[in-house]
Image 1 (cartoon, rainbow, N blue to C red):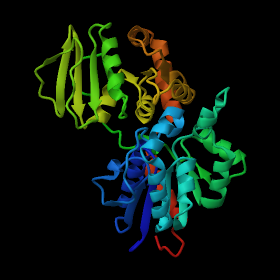
Image 2: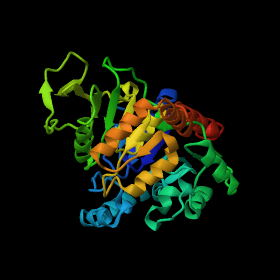
Image 3: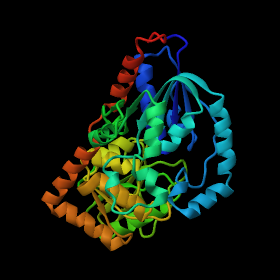
Amino acid sequence: MTNLTVTFLSNGHGEDSIGASLALAFHLHHPEAKLFAFPTVDEGKAYEGQDIDILGPKQLMPSSGLLMHNWEMFKTDIKAGFINMTLKQIRDLAGLQTDVLIVVGDAFALLLSSLVKTKYRFYVQTLVSAHHAKSKTIKLNRFFMEHLSYPERALIRHLVYQTYVRDELTAQSLTATGLKRVSFLGNPMLDGLEGKRLDLSSPVITLLPGTRAYSLKALELMLASLKLLTGVTAVVAWAFDTKIPEFDDWQPVPVSEQKSLLKTLALGSNRVYFFKGRFADCLHSADIVIGTSGTANEQAAALGKPVIAFPVPPIYSQAFLENQKRLLAEALTVVPAETRAIAEAVKTLLNDKVLYQTGAARGQERMGKAGGSDAIIQDIVKRISDTKLNL
């Protein structure tokens, strides 16, 4: 393993997190290898704290990588320099040489990876599930987000040594098209979520407003909906370095002695606790989740936490929600972006045990179990262990 180079190419916030989880697994098994990361959308903060060199130009776009979700975001990114940034990435990728390339993301990431000189290219498809493809309508701008299309399958066939998908149905779907090197070994999105329940009174509603530009707007609506409920506890995994703003009618109260608790708000018998760096604990503490997130909503569902979501256009759009609903089925309840609708959905889930248990079970079924990162890395190592790389 001496002098072996392994590069993780990822194209999104969630993809970076998965890439970092895979990198950690690789490093644990083979600490002698030299690891690199090439994030194409975010700055690669998920890789920080590991012994990984981060490559490539680092310029955040206004859409945070979602420029194809609608025309307005596309135009905004173009004005912000998306084309120039992509050309720089193409230049850097064309000059990159690595022994092993692990691509984490979608068809665009795989296309970019074709520029890299490598002995072995592996593909971890994190975006698309065969469940997504059950849409009755096909929107051109979302086609590659919801279907394992012929162009993507062609890239897989000609570029990839082995592809790892997010569920068994997707593996079966790709195999049925004639692709042979496809595996489902677990969902790496679920790794690193070990946590414990916070010492808070029930019921606990975990708020996941996301990490994009719309998150504050989403959080304001979530908190407004809690005003229509009584006797609930809410927790927020605060993901930003900025100060927590004030919210109408909610009053700050003295912070209790809980680890990483930043702020506590009160309104009648309701309490909202803001924690920093305890995302997994906030997930494990939830009885119900109100979320406007991509990856985090799916992670919550995987832990058996029913999720309520509403659109926050243009980024967290109705089309995105419909796609997520096809994946998560009964684990996700989609409601209008109205306080009363959100509050009523919470009441319904708390009072209807059959509905609650159905949602909890379906989320676990659709998302699978943890351990995918280690299983994928072990499989990669096994597949190249008898080559000149001397793994």
